[in-house]
Length: 231
Image (cartoon, rainbow, N blue to C red; front, side, top):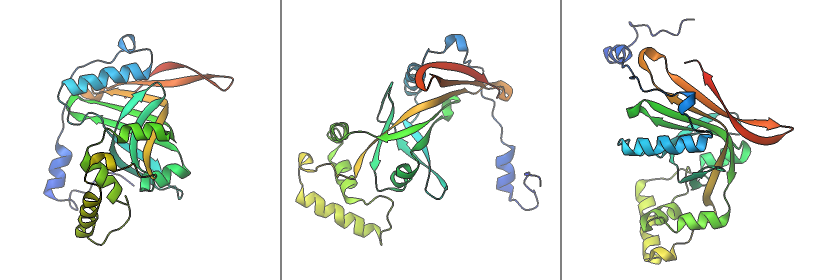
């Protein structure tokens, strides 16, 4: 069966959207210019995205698979990275937290559309320790702490009013930010990458794709190798 859309069954708006095309320019991603490891290369691109005005350059699409094999995606914010991996925080009772407890493999996609770039990280997600979660929690604004405490993330609720009532109760009980302690169910995950792809959009869809993968010797994790993929 063809995957083409039947114009007789699609609206004019859909046909218009399908006909829109943009060329992605001529910026280059060469092996000779790439950093030796993906973290240094990501640091360069993240700084560049920020300098060029990309909105929320630390926003990333987190992909998980649940116990039934059903995939799901959502946008979260990168809150730190180093040679160990990429860190985000959430309620571990949420849909993503439940999925990661069963299948800890995850993907992260940084969609920097405005500058014709994306980065895709694939690896294993592990919980960060309590000390690290506490340290990040201490940097959060008062309102964010209250919201995280009030919300039972991903669980149904009867109305917005019920949630706002819960927030008001917490604000009355804990008027100072320092009084709002991190819930035990809230904390961080670190995605330790095994594969990181850097994608640079190019003219005529001849995009540059460089993939970093960890080399292994007898099961031990070694240095990073770089390979070019066809667009």
